Length: 99
Image 1 (cartoon, rainbow, N blue to C red):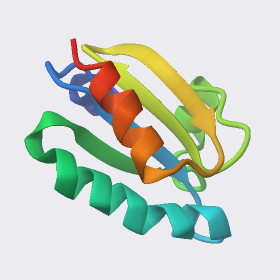
Image 2 (spheres, rainbow, N blue to C red):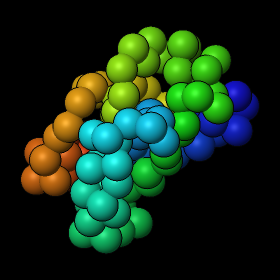
Image 3 (spheres, one colour):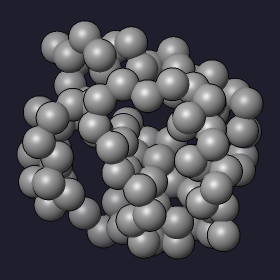
């Protein structure tokens, strides 16, 4: 948990993708997340967290369905959404929450 807190306390937006390997929509989001990372580069960090392997963390952030995305800025949760999201919407949300 302390490594996670350290990770989200960066000076750039940090997007957490709570996913499950058996989840179809999660698999759909995987290439979209890669494209977002490719487009935004070092201006954002993206971390994928398997809810089946990290139940305590998923519970802490009240993840009830997958995929669930949570965006942190300087350690503070600024946005959360479950389900599919388009690349352009995701990029817009990340860029809007840069400082």
